[in-house]
Amino acid sequence: MNTGRSRTADFLKGVALIAMVQLVIVEYLAQQPILNGLAGKISLFLGGSPAAPTFLAIMGYYIARQGHGFRHTISRGVKLILLGVLLNIARNAIILFDVFMAKASADIWHLIFGTDILILAGLSLVAMAILIRILRGHVLAYLALIIVFLLLQYIIPPVEKMAPNSVILPFFYGKYPQAQFPFIPWFAYVLAGYSFFLFKKFFISDQFKHSRTIKIILLSLSGILLILSLPFGFDVSINHRLFYHHGILFFMFCVNYLFWWLLSASSIVNRVNNKLTAYLEFIGKNVTAFYVIFMILAGNLALLFQKGQDFLMLFIVFVILLAATSFFVWIWVRMRRKAA
Image 1: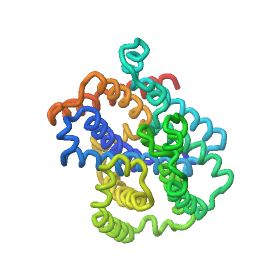
Image 2: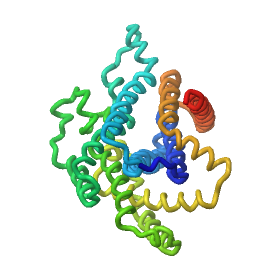
Image 3: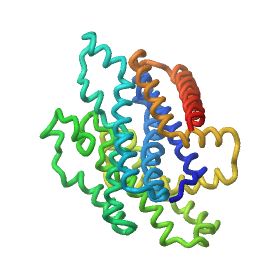
Image 4: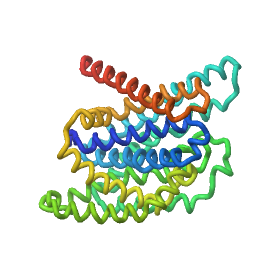
């Protein structure tokens, strides 16, 4: 079992968190002209491929790298599912309180059981624990399973029409309004990260891994493909329905982006070690704590402020929330160290 940390992985997660922060603030607080304009579209794009796919692929990679047992992986998955539900309650605390006091009306079950990425991560861990027992280390089987999961949404009937008020089905499948991260197709990124580790371990020699020339060639080829496919990736990213329920082509776009960004980030981390990279690695190392704390703060702040903030106010809120979240994460880390 390998429990060592990777600076590159923490850096990637840290950058992904910043991308997520700016997107949430823009979506929650921006004026409609900003949200519908070029700035809003760029924000959606930056909060798309650089965020959720990165988190999930790295999670899949570390499931393979750490090699925890069946019970440990199942237990961790269940805890993340419960944490996701508790996060939904905490970030909707104000509106839930208003509903309880009969000051407002809302579908409380969909607020509590909205498909948060933490719930997806928990379901993915449970699924991976089962698959690892069945498939072991057969990388081709995992690659085939990726294709199967991406094709399932084209085969399964549109269940949201048959069960429009379902609370549980959006966790797994369906283009429900509250289904932002359904298991199908997003589990494919966890499988991709897991498969990438197996592929590196069994098929790539150490000489190949450390060849600078090969890395430059791969980075260049991936970069060219990324530039050519960027218009397509941008169009899907700025459309919520297409992004959250995308198919094989956008998955391939994201995988190529992740490969290019992995090689680029590895080069950055190997050459740069300053306060900025240290900060990004710090929040990346504590990604779950950062995400939970930020979403609680942002979710309740959005209920206090109506949409209609200009660029200056959005920047101020970005700085304040980023600073506040980082401070609370720092406190949380210190408390854990003292308790250890």
